[in-house]
Image 1: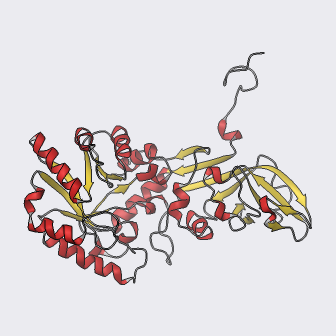
Image 2: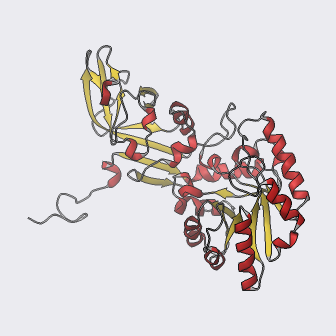
Image 3: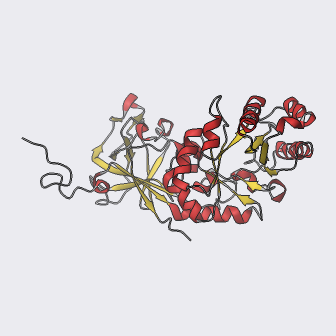
Length: 384
């Protein structure tokens, strides 16, 4: 017997993935664009780039970056060369694309040939980029990264002092910006913020004139002293709160819904899930939902996370497994759920920041962990 082809007459005729997917991830491009406009306004005259690394924080750079370009963004930042090459295809020649990790040894010609601007993080990258400019007989654009406290990427203080003493090492390099990265921008009163600001200003005074960039998402909310010429929001674009402790000014950009596979009534002394980590204390109704840690729903949310059915919270009970989570839906009105019903996993009732807090991490990780098995749908994003 032959197997019917999808869409042909037979069992799969009329099949719609969204109707049968175990979970649906909805990405609101209009919310992302609104967040960009809010951040641009907050930056008070500084240009506003968009950080779209890690596949736009898990939400799909192929769709997100063009939507942001339609909202007026002209400068985009990614972490790796391959991300930059993909972005160049999706955005065309007009957008400026910056690669934060800079060029790996030998990759410099690929940057130049695809009009990707490297962020130069150490003397080796600086020398290799200058050498390529000399071979090509023209100045090449770059961003110079200096370290003011992160001890991660960027020229260390001694390396910066050496560069300031030998400015000829920048010959052939056209600096778009000098940048550094804030260590603790999300904590407004952390004294390291003011210290980094002072160190950055001192560093700029010893370098050739160029644009300056300091503020990430949270840095924008530290005030205009931190804005300089270019701000670089990332997570805030996608709904993560850039100002913890205050109401989130950003619109939520994701809605994750999981589908009920099974409902069952249980009673003590029964347990739920691997390791019997949840023991039923009385009569309860348990719903099994079709997503798990293989989909990026973190195992740390075992017995901690919660989903929602309308306005009713349904706590995660038992361990998160690879493909499934189990919810206590005892408080959900009778008849509201049945196999095939959708529950809100992430959304207005339980944000990525909420999930991050319950998992002992941050909303960034919740977003970037979102898996590839979800049926994805996009809302909005039209130019204007």
